[in-house]
Image (cartoon, rainbow, N blue to C red):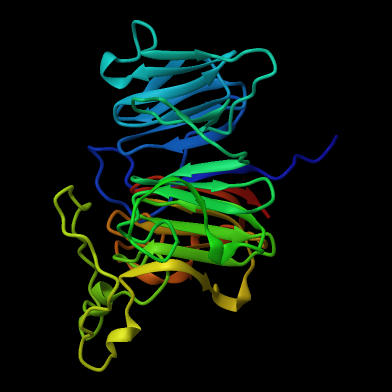
Length: 355
């Protein structure tokens, strides 16, 4: 009789629903028949695609979705589904009943996914649902106000709001069409991720680059807000909420440093991609971004996280924020190797396998 293979499962750190308290420890995600193939977190719930193609919502809006599918893209207003030969948007407020609010049938030969990629463009889980994309892409990711595309040859393009430097073009101006991130040109990238107001890419050689807003240390660069709250009383960091529409724009200048530090030591906005070093020279295989935190998986199966930690989303058994990459100790302590990571706005989902 053949020996059973290593067990694989999904785990979650951080905020898991509106009614649940913050948590620093890991919780194993309840398994689904056939396993979990796709994890898509939104603000207050998470969408799953099982190995058998079943569509499930977990959290505030729980239960199965209509029929079976290959992918989904959730938001607080709609859930966008890729099922059968069509893309569909279902309104959350309607309780996913009464038919889709929008539908785009796929013609023979057309392919969609991984979402948000769609035939002739890309989709968003809020109106208008379909947008043109004037270039070929192998991956597209969405921030709160910007988009990042990984081209077929490893080039990176960005567009949208640039007020926090999240486009990587060196300024704060908005860009209406995909524009090449010239600082990365000539270095083929293998993965990209978009946070709320920051962006990250991984080169084919495993190097990590980050740019955009560093308010909570999400770029793994020195953060003034965190430095001011360090010793003598190294308490957990209290973070303010998401920026509102009327908030003043951050400036491309270093703020006044606390005593004993130079002003240039702190970075509030990084408008060009910055090369980051993980401990022990680890090479990165996958990366994901939450609203204001970042997670990276190394080629040897370790998980590093940094940035905003108010809800325990960094996985370090506390709610402190960090501008330094720190290895999540839960997985090696339990004989697990990390294979994948998917950040939600306030949580982090991890796929790990027994060593």
